[in-house]
Amino acid sequence: MNVNYICSRCHRRFAVNTLAFKCECGGAFELEKEPPKLSLARLKSRANSIWRYREVLPVVKDENIVTLGEGMTPLVEERIFDKEILLKLDYLFPSGSYKDRGASVLVSKIKELGIKTVIDDSSGNAGAAIAAYCARAGITCEICCPESASAGKLVQISLYGAKLNKIPGSREDTAKFIQEKAREVFYASHNRNPLFMEGTKTVFYEICEQLNWKVPDSIITPVGYGSIILGIALAGRELKDMGVISNLPKLIAVQTEAIPPIYEAFTKGETKVTPLAQVRHTYAEGIACLNPIRG
Ligand SMILES: [Zn+2]
Image 1: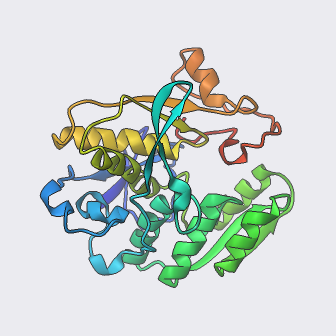
Image 2: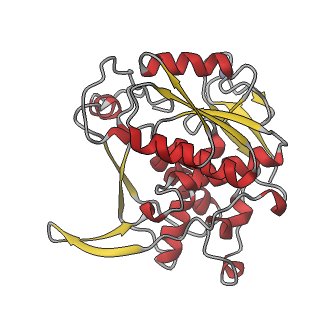
């Protein structure tokens, strides 16, 4: 599948190997691609990884696929508050989180573009996932994070062989540093690059396939920058357009009370999210995002 970036605001097009990570107008990139086609009959003989949905993933040649066998995580039945629910166990991924979905697709495309060095800014699961898949692909990877980031994930990122660059100051100082550096090195941003969501969308393909292509009533998902919920929405549109499913689930986003910018915009009926200024402590640090880029 051949693809371009397209600005979500002014609709300007960019080649996917551009060093730009957003449009000059400030708009986030979306992916422009041909309508996907998927043959359900072919799935039976395929491996249990996200790459079983090969035709809907934006990598042209099979030889460029960077995989660690990620995907088709269990869907486990449970009763909570007298409701029957299903839990999707995405912590069972090679690097420990669903971010492997996005990293596998993004790093595969980076390999296909012949890019040898990348940077990203994350002190958590995304940094670990990008580092793991870059190690698999033989791509040099530098992960930038605030000096104050907690130790556990940093050890994991270093163990994968990524260069860890601790930036003094706040999270904002790290963001400034990386935007400067991204003029020279490809910024493999899990938040800005829409190729990442092409991977996270596979969670909804899997859920539907595991339910024999029935759509669940509702999906509840934690939201920081929103890469799971946006991936689910994207996959829902694709599957409906292809005629595989006929309805969409209700999507329920959950934020932490400490840092709820999307919740606040949603409850006020606003269509744009106002970034929050102040960092407040939360144990849910993976979704503690003050400024969701695709809010
Ligand atoms: Zn633009």
